[in-house]
Image (cartoon, rainbow, N blue to C red; front, top):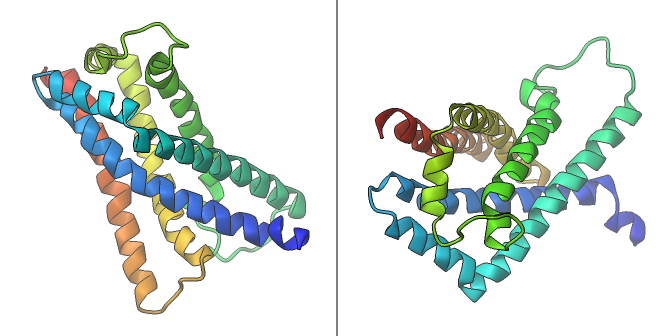
Length: 214
């Protein structure tokens, strides 16, 4: 029983579920962040306050962090396991099986994790009181950050890489769950591509607008 629970297949299955849960969170986060484009601070600050205080959201926050920890830790474990299993690259590889996205998932994931840590320091740690700041004015804090060119470049670069990560993660998660079909798999691939373009593009609009037009 323990072999089944801790097998690579089980880890991939749970990691896929955690990844899909994270994919559902991003559109919600984007919807709230787009309020930063409003000239008034109240809509965004009200939404941020609601997300920080509503009991159900706080429970979902715990689930979200759990999903992030599972997705990252097991992703790293499986990648290290693959490296040890195949220390020497194959002479010839099937390019359809070893795509650009799958080969670099660990690295795009590492960069995204680095950005998440920076993001937590700027906002989440302020909310819980570990970092100095005004948790009632995240609108002002975000606008101040987006006036820093280096921060904008890092932000935009990370979200461009997130697009690559999302495309492969979205598509491969359904494959891992065994939802392969000659008709539906191409459809899922198209949906993954659209999602991987629209979500990062939506987040990118915010710093570009605030940086160049405000």
